[in-house]
Amino acid sequence: MPDLIEPYEDALRDFPGSAQAIDLGLERFKATYKDLTDPGLPQMIRETYAESLFFNDTLHTFHRIDDLVEYMTRTGAGLSESLVSVQQVVRDGPDVYVRWTMEFKTRAVRRDIHSRSIGISHLRFDEEGRVVLHQDFWDSGHGLYMHLPFVGFAVRRARKAL
Image (cartoon, rainbow, N blue to C red; front, side):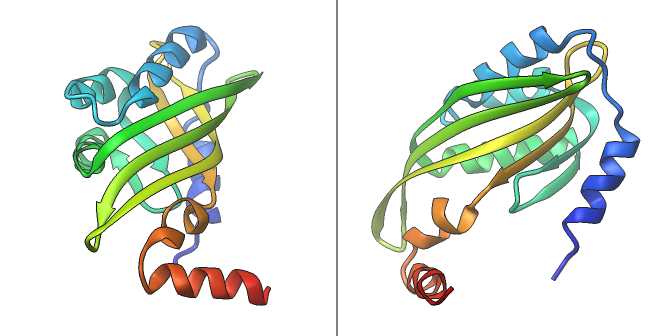
């Protein structure tokens, strides 16, 4: 199993962030994630994130904007509906913590999936308000895998056993 902590700690050192344009960065971030099915998503990602970055959503890690654009575009294309709502923003110098809810609808293995989950994103921005560090904290097992046939059964069973 890959180490998830060390890459995050490395990113904290590599991307110290700037408090200079946090407000601009937050507005871009909220607009970008509001609806992942938006056809303008690739351009919004490019305006929201820096070329060199650290992005981890608990499922994937990216360091280049092109890889992130491809991933998010593919993700959005697989959804029939998507809504991310920001409930709270906490700022501590260059560190920004965004508490959100995510709701999406998709179809997998001939089955409709409607998922709702909660999470927190730790963000840091550069001097132009572009995201250089994005670390999500959310339960992908509950938010995604639990809804899939076979995998969902195993996830629910493991949760019950614990």
